Every structure is written in C-alpha cells, then in structure tokens.
Length: 234
Ligand code: DC
Image (cartoon, rainbow, N blue to C red; front, side, top):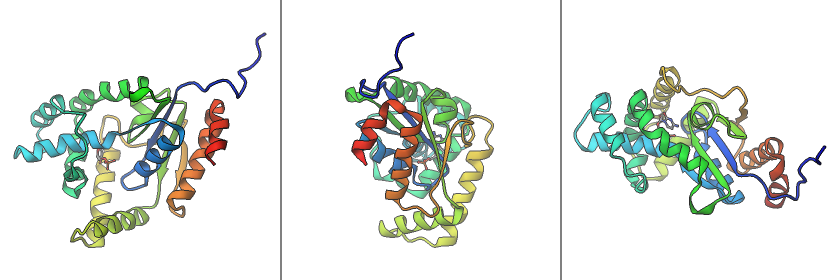
C-alpha cells in the first residue's frame, strides 16, 4: 500500500465556496482568503448585479425574463467594476433576474470554468455567492456558509452605505435586506441554502479578522494538503 500524501507535497488545486445571505461578509472573507492563499477571487453576485444593471440601464424591467436573459447572454465578464453595481437598486434588480433559470444557466458555465481553470495561474479559486457549494461547484473541497443575524447584517450594510455618502435610513435597509433574502431563499432554482457538507460560520459576533481566522481553521480541517500554507498565513 502506498503512503498517504505527505503535507509537504504541493497542495492540490483548492476551491473555496463561500455562500450566504446578503451583507453577511462573504465578499470580504472570500477576497481575504484568496489573497492569503494565492487563489483567484470571483464575486458571483457581481455577475447577477451586472445583468440587473444592464436591464435597468436599457430601461427594462428586471422581472422581464426575455430582457434579463438577453442581458446575461451578452454580459462582458471583464467589466465588473462599475460602482453602480453596488447600489441598493442594483442589488434588488440582481435578486430578481437571478430567479430566472435561463439567466442562471447563462452564467453557470463562466463560473464553472473559473473554478476549474483559475485565471492568472492561481492555485485555486475562492468564489462567493448563494449557490456555489450547492450548484456551481458541488465538489468544492471547502464550503463555508457565512451568516449573521438580519439585524447585524442590516447594521453593517447601513454603515457601509452611510460611509459612501448615501442618504439611507436603517429600517429601509433592514426591510430591503429581508425582502432580498426571502426572494433568494424561496426561488425554485438554486435557492440560497447551505450545502449539506458546508461549515456554517456565524459572524454575528465576529469582526472581519476573527471571521478570517475561523475560515482559515475550516480550510485547514477540510483541505489537509493546505494546512502548512494556512499555518504560514496565521
Ligand atoms: O452577493 P450580492 O449581494 O452581490 O448578490 C446580488 C444578488 O445576486 C443576490 O440577491 C442574489 C443573486 N445571486 C445569486 O442568485 N447567486 C449567486 N451565486 C450570487 C448572487
């Protein structure tokens, strides 16, 4: 019988699926994991936001499937840095276009290719979204479902929007967030839910640093070949 792989052997490509509801801290966490472990990062929500924004800018209705799928089919995945992508109304439009199976299908292949062949020769990928661990990369070795109480998530989103100079009130932020979670969780296709084998990370009482450290522990547990690198990062 051959020996088990030694921890000094170079690690296998690593895919970390980071899913969870709005404003749970998925993006910050996935970006930090990617930077620390030399992985490519993909914010899959930006794809749905770009589709929603394209529909809005064309004067269309995000609830119109034909308009949404046309926008998804012609999406330029190289241009996902428009600040308008972060606006609350774009998040709302994203959640509406994301409920159409045809839109999801149009974006699936790009996400899967990103996971299998991470750009720029990276050693793997950290992808954040709603269905990465359940649908996009169900065989990802590390799945983290990041969550926090609705109040805490709304508080964070409110602070973010205020810091960006937006004229917002807390109750409106909370109700928008709850409406979006409700829509994302109840849709028929690829709803927001933890994969059966996801580690649940509740960040209600954790700051970004503590969440990052807890996530590194999960990576070390789930991807033993990466333990050495995780230790170096710590
Ligand atoms: O993560 P975010 O807030 O940028 O996502 C915006 C919307 O996009 C979200 O409300 C639902 C949708 N989305 C999705 O359906 N599946 C994903 N993998 C990522 C986002």
